Length: 336
Ligand code: FAD
Ligand code: MG
Image (cartoon, rainbow, N blue to C red; front, side, top):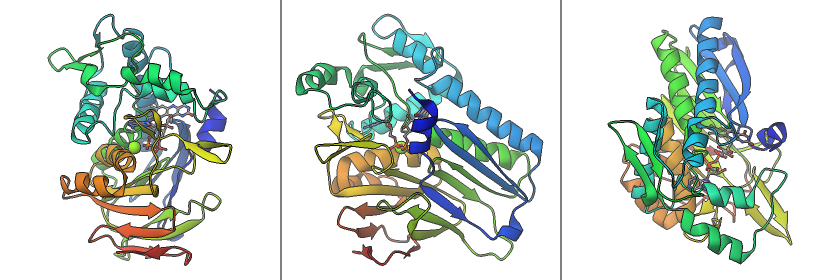
């Protein structure tokens, strides 16, 4: 895969706004297939930045399907053969991924790897597979065949050619870890944006809430359609306008419906989840996108601390109660 090209495609879709005179510094690095941006206020230093980026790179090395000896690649290579013992952090993320697969009825499924590879969206090999290929591949996608042993931190994919893909949850985990490092180093205020997985915490000097912009799907990156005002939250968006290709005027994107092996088709363009844990927000935003508005809203009720912003293809927007959201592009309208 052309790493840089695809990374550019998945760059941050949420923009942070802050008053410049409050910035002590910001640092950026290319990791997890995207631009990772960290701003430590009151007070960051190079050691803390280095520790954070070291952790992000470590997570990539453990959890990437593109790195041959990552824990995930080792699990995939041993599919149908034997369980693989993994690092405790990796086990924790896989366990949480399985939990979200179960509660979402398989809409979120970390064993979606074979379908992701078949379509190759974002890679040089992206293509529309034949119905036969999809039918042959789909039986490999089933979170129930993901066997976990918490005593030994071992993971087993029951059948050959099954493959884990943590692309819909690991960026959230990395954001949580980055934020924990900053907090335990005594940083009072910080913003972390790992390709659309945003965490912000701490009280700004003027006590105003943080403003997180939501990318305008129809416009160039950086142009927003609205702003969410939040405090001490994570804000995570799953959208279909960054990683996709078009063939015969059909838009094929990277969030798959594991029930049929095709990019999820519904009236949504993006779902943003606002909650406390970024790993959960990452998994939930993907799950809700696949489920669509009605079923996704039902799932959200099981997570009372979570709120959401739904953007629809007809430019309408629905927010769950309590979201402080302002539209900045008047071609969009609130339907609540
Ligand atoms: P999300 O909605 O959060 O996730 C969508 C991604 O999850 C898809 O791309 C697919 O991988 C997977 N997925 C699709 N459907 C489902 C489903 N129903 N259930 C569960 N998962 C699903 N990109 C590169 O181009 N090159 C890299 O080398 C690279 N390395 C990465 C390493 C790590 C550890 C991670 C976490 C990501 C990496 N990425 C890389 C990016 C990755 O391939 C995804 O595109 C990205 O994580 C998608 O995030 P998102 O927020 O856009 O969408
Ligand atoms: Mg996700």
